[in-house]
Image (cartoon, rainbow, N blue to C red; front, side, top):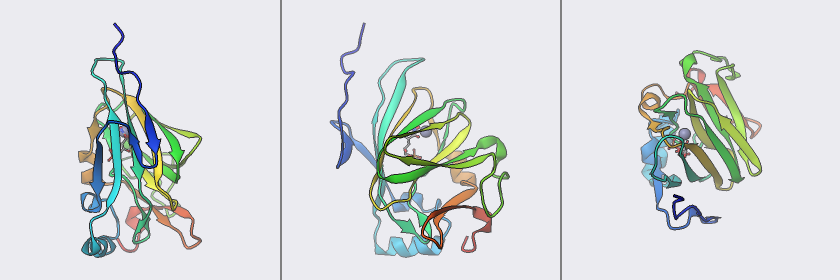
Length: 204
Ligand code: PAN
Ligand code: ZN
């Protein structure tokens, strides 16, 4: 028996899947994510903007099904750090995901859980267990299982993307809330995104 509602339509501006609610995260929801707490508090004193929203399609069904969500991450910085999503590991750790860039300019920050943040702790930041992969229109980023993933908007327009993941993936935010990502993505002196070890960030 083929289910009835197989088609979803979406728009990029405003970014949403038609007929689906948009679940929003505000700056206050990400207070613990940003490295520069003073800059975050100063921004919060001015207001509590929506940083991103996700509109999801999660069909019922068991093993083998797919879920997907359309995300929109608004541009901006807190201190030197670009706007980002909370980020998570999948509760079912082997579950991979693909991110399909639709518009805007950004990147996926990926950290292998097995490294526990100890890998690539240099200034340059990137080790085998950590990667910053560009996410933009006409690109697909493969997020392997066992990998913490966070989306970063490094541009000046909303970053819009589709994430497609196994229905049994689940979202584990607790591990990120406890240890955070070991790396941050900042606007460098040359105005370009730079990956840096959180522990070495002067304002942390
Ligand atoms: C995405 C994310 C979306 C929002 O659909 O859920 O980008 O990020 P957070 O869930 O970290 O707030 C996904 O990766 N799903 O598995
Ligand atoms: Zn995910």
